[in-house]
Every structure is written in structure tokens, then in C-alpha cells.
Image (tube, rainbow, N blue to C red; front, top):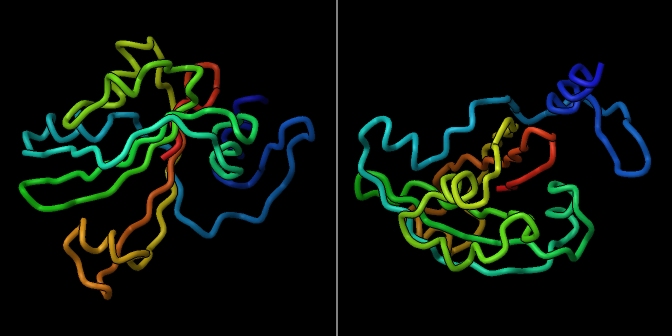
Amino acid sequence: VRQAILQLVNDGYLRREKSKGTFVTTPPTKFRFIEGLRGFSAEMKRHGIAYVSKVLEKDVIAADEKVAQRLAIPDGELVFYMHRLRVVNNWPFLLDRHYVPYKLVPGIETKLADNVSLYSILEHDYKLVLHHGWREFEPVSPSSKKEMELLEIYPTTHLLYVESVVYDTNNAPVDYF
């Protein structure tokens, strides 16, 4: 029964609220699917594709309401935040922003740098087992001039916004990006 409820939550038909319960929702309008947890770096290496990961910003910050909700932590709890530019075959490919509960990864800000895999650090240095997750995809337009500059695109370029949460074996959120 727990697995069935988890699947309905992951599919967007149910939502859980801490200390309140599980509620029926309207079916999601965004495309969502469950997938394997191979990270970007591992996927690029697997296919032999040249890539660069450039850290634009990293810090330990207080989680805002949305981040706290996605990570199932209290508002204001510390999270590790990282913003990166991913370049594939010398072309700007994507921007990502990761949020990880800092209590799970103390000191991670000193370990992550350009071309270092976040998931590799989580698994090897912090012994976190990345078990399952979900991703939603939504078509969007560029949201800022800075974004257009980093991706080297025009204001009329169509983009794909991806939102994801990765869970450990205890179904605890480990990474929201």
C-alpha cells in the first residue's frame, strides 16, 4: 500500500503534507516521469561526449518555502546551493541549480568545483544512496538577460525547464534541482 501511495504521489495524483496527511490532487499538467539516477556527468562520460561543468555560484543558504517543501525540511533550514553552467561539445547546454540539505553534506562547499560530479560526491564522500526520483518538464522562454547571455541564446529561443527531486532509500529527499 505504501508503494502504491508513493507511486500516486510521484505521478502527481496525491500530495503529502507534513503533519497533515495525504490528499487527492488534480492530475498534473506537466509531464512527469520516474527515471534512473545517472547524473549528467555520468551520462556524458557513458556516451563519450565532451562536456564542462562550470560552477557559477555555491553557498550555504537558508531554504525558502519552495525549497523547504521539496526537500521536506523546515523553512529556513540550511541547504547547500549550487548554480552551474553545463557546456557540451563547446556549446552552452544547460543551467542547473541544486539544493541539498546541509545537515546531510557538511563541508560540501569545499569539495565541489568545476567538472566535479555532485552525485559522485554525495555517493562516495557522504555515503548517500540515491535511490529514486521524479522529473517534471515544462516548455518556457528565457527568464532573464543573464540566462540568455550564459546560454548564448535569443529571447525567442524555446527552453525546457526541468524540476527534479532525488530520494534516498528511506524516501527522504536528498537533492532538489
